[in-house]
Length: 165
Image (cartoon, rainbow, N blue to C red; front, side, top):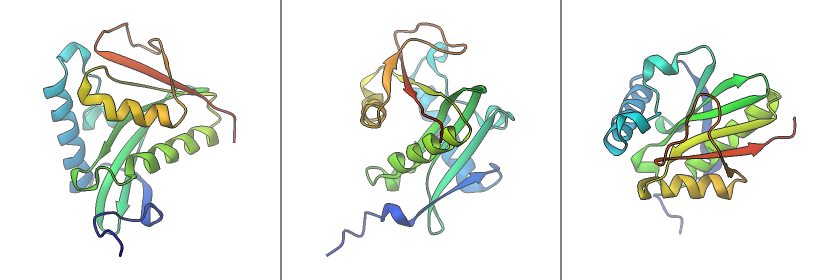
């Protein structure tokens, strides 16, 4: 018998998103609000909808049928370095492989773009432990601050060296 709570990851469709739909706007607003509630302002690096519309950022949404399962974004820091932003799984899809599938998509796109390095920032608190485990499981290693980040005891930084596609 199949667990009806677990969608097959092969049923997940990941598409570039223009941020105009209500589901993605609601998911990202909830993400931003939770990050603001979890981290002090000086350590909160989640982007709001306006910031996610920066031309250097591409947002993807992940769908199981008509249901939004999650999202992630890729920001170009320079022609060889990208940053993962706004990784989020919809609450009803947590623990079902959505984050891993979105992360795999972002890594594949980064390779296609010719990035040699992909980095990210996440929190150091216990709340962020599942995210840190996800990134470590997928080959990311801890590093120091990159881009415009400064050292922060509430932030952890990760990077992944990429071979071009």
